[in-house]
Length: 456
Ligand SMILES: Cc1cc2nc3c(=O)[nH]c(=O)nc-3n(C[C@H](O)[C@H](O)[C@H](O)COP(=O)(O)OP(=O)(O)OC[C@H]3O[C@@H](n4cnc5c(N)ncnc54)[C@H](O)[C@@H]3O)c2cc1C
Image (cartoon, rainbow, N blue to C red):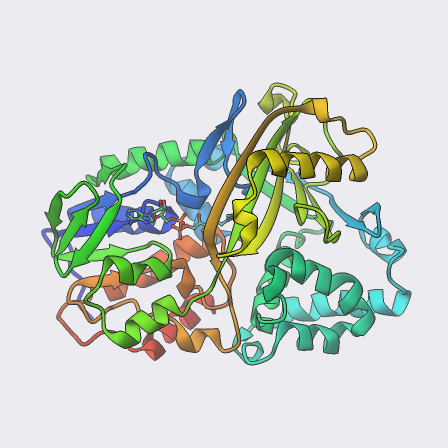
């Protein structure tokens, strides 16, 4: 395989999330002329930052793991390693109207909702899951069947099912065991130090700081960054912007959610359209709160109360010192929903009312007046649902339209969505993007193989 380098073809990249930015940086550093088009007026996509009252921090809660090797390498490249901070955090569990700590083995063993045998089987499931390397054999098994077999029905119904419902709602029974394996493996990796306590990291200043430096590096590398430029359509070598302007490139890479690709690129073949539109997404309604005082001292509290308007409480100030936020407490309340769920239409006012009621039930010391700022992010396409045998239906990277490529997070075959996987996906896609010639578009098997190499 030959790679094009200096004075190679010109590239247009659609989408300024971590996928698009990584591709742009890597291509530009090979001497290729790159233009990066982002629909929003800033870079970052799901990992962007926003203003909440008087503070600027991530729109969605983000942490870094010590096992995030691709992300850590990027941070080193950006000169940000010295700004990384690591802390042990605690995990809570809100079940049957009570808040429990689940941060140490002893607390786990004392956890009242489960009998000892169920706890041991649950612990075994997590340990066993963390040892599995070939997730492909889990792809044909439903997560629910695998978890019942490994942990027993009681632990499944008391722990796993509420957790699956929290992340997947009505889709809880549709994902494969590869999905839950990926979550177990990532969370186990967060506890891999000697203490076995959960340890997370962040960069001082949050993703706003990472994005500031990354944007600087993109421009230094010669990338033309075009913000506020949603792409309306793509026809072979030509992009049409929503403004009506057109721009021509030798090659184009689309990094947006998969289901919108056929709308942009109408000349794709029927089987490609079917694969791209066949992907089902989970979205999120994620409430951010800036509070006068903390709620508890858990980074994550899993919530299994179905009547609540959120399925977890993420208290960022259990990781990032409150002094970063002028002594305030920063809390996220995520609710994961299928992309077309009516929950996306709940107004901010109604959501705020429901949130206040739920927090009053959970935390006796919480008062509505504690809320200094309230803001809601709604995104319909966040995570592709890893249904049975998902990797066999992945959209290919090379499309039938000459010079047009699709690199989308939906190609992360085992369903772990995080910045590290996103960067890895971009880096693994580069050889396909840079290969010479107009070979017929990549088969799905080839796309899967590439993923398997990436995930091995
Ligand atoms: C609630 C939440 C919590 C998370 N927590 C973590 C965490 O703790 N750690 C972690 O590592 N990761 C976390 N992630 C995941 C992480 O944010 C994603 O993996 C990553 O940001 C995905 O990047 P991407 O480039 O694939 O997609 P996106 O960020 O979605 O980027 C796609 C970009 O394309 C743009 N676009 C779309 N259509 C067009 C168009 N027509 N023209 C031009 N531009 C267009 C969009 O505006 C967007 O900027 C979290 C995500 C969420 C939602």
